Length: 386
Image (tube, rainbow, N blue to C red):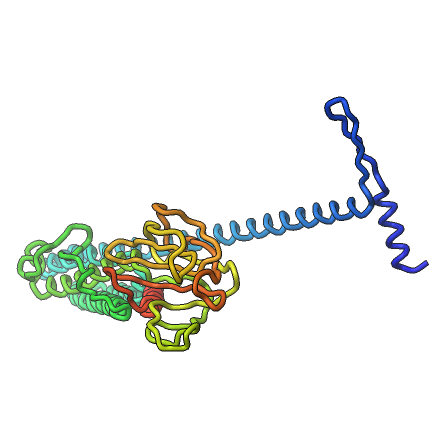
């Protein structure tokens, strides 16, 4: 007997013909379940069980990955908290040593203690900022190591110099961060000044005055030191404002597909073969590839637009709107609040389209912009945030 015949016989023995009788309304009905029908049903149930198992496993893996990421973020934050607390304690200890020194150093010790308070406010303002610990830790470590001498006069001078070095490092870090964020906004065609704060934030309270004399009076330090504190604080305040603004702007990518098949501007129309203006950016991909919101906002339109096919539009505020067209499926409704990265639907080829892709547009105050500039600016903002 051949192997195929033995297999067929085994299946028939496993799924013999069965008869099912059902009584309904006083009548008896009979159904015959052939071996073939039973095998098809068993295969379907097995496939469903396998699919549920795969989905469950994937969900568990995602949950474990998310939990691991949360733990890593918590550890990083705790590490930075320990760092700032340790450095604060060391600065306080240095000031205490100065105050306990000779009387001739008393006046300078008092000045350095006041400078320390101003620096502490600036350090608090920089707390948690990406790259701040890396920029400031070496300077503080060197300062604390060099302040171990027992000579009070040398301690006074050493701490004074270390404060100057720490303020230089903080000012350089703040300026570099603000400058890089300004460049990211310009890449998107935006004016950084439009997103700047009216005042300068320093350690919590708002310091309205830009006059070094007024700030020196508030901090009770010399004007030169106050001016440098103000510059660093202003740069950090502007960086904070631009970071907050960036979170509400459409700077993320609408899909994970890496390539763009058609850019913004004049191109040859694929249907007519003649030059025509293309108001968006095209991302090719497989059918039902996930499409994501590029910024938080409110869904303002869902449905079919002429030429665009199935379309989703989001109002992000500040005059910004994004459009996602040629979708195969839509997962949101009008009036719905969406977060950056939230799935809006699946990629398709509806409307005036020659193949599966996403047509993505960015509008500012009623005028179409080049989406590629926003995508590049978003990538640069991520680099700054790293």
